[in-house]
Length: 259
Ligand code: 0WD
Image (tube, rainbow, N blue to C red):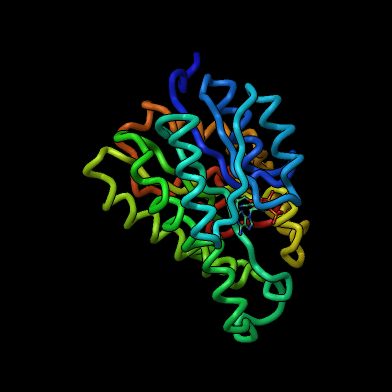
């Protein structure tokens, strides 16, 4: 069943084929959505254009979320090419590598600002730029992680940025609710990607989740893609301001034993 027939979607944060955004794009395409992409500069342009060509010849545009000019141009391009936007996927984060190890109290002022600008404020910036092009009833989703509300060693300022992001999701859901626009977060379990590998000890986190989670496995970008289809579709028509865990149930564990 194609759940997204007739819907348009803009997907941010594809860096390569392992990106969570790539799994989301594939699932949305399989469900009939008309896709479009942004990429962060020339470094990832080719990868994104290759994926866009595979998924229905989707248009893609350069958009560094720290640039208000690029965000403005993005809205013009989306309005011109797609007319209106029914789904927006925020799958962007950045933290200096030295801030993904050691002590949070060693985080520099500039490292903190950069992390929160790119990983949290960017959702506000994107929504602000695209608000006229988002259709009434559209669905917005952002990728988050358990480290927002609980201590995950070495996740550090990335967790602080995710706490801000989840709060932004709730306030945007309130602001946009009068237009029937829904805003949610997907809290994904750990997946090996270019970004996550920057977290010190990440492989150990992946192994710990598979051992402890109720489903006894890790999640994949395809698992996240399926949840994203649900959130973009009319099946989730009354779901907003929520953090939806797609982590094989790991978030619900209070204690586990090796027995
Ligand atoms: O375990 C994981 N991989 C999890 C990731 C668990 C739970 C949540 N997440 C989140 C991340 O925090 C992020 O919000 O999912 C989102 C996507 O992350 P990903 O798929 O794990 O990582 P990756 O494939 O690296 O994509 C993130 C991309 C960047 O990739 P690179 O590797 O090039 O830094 O975010 C984009 C960029 O493409 N990005 C930007 N886009 C626009 N403007 C910017 C920017 N300034 N900075 C980074």
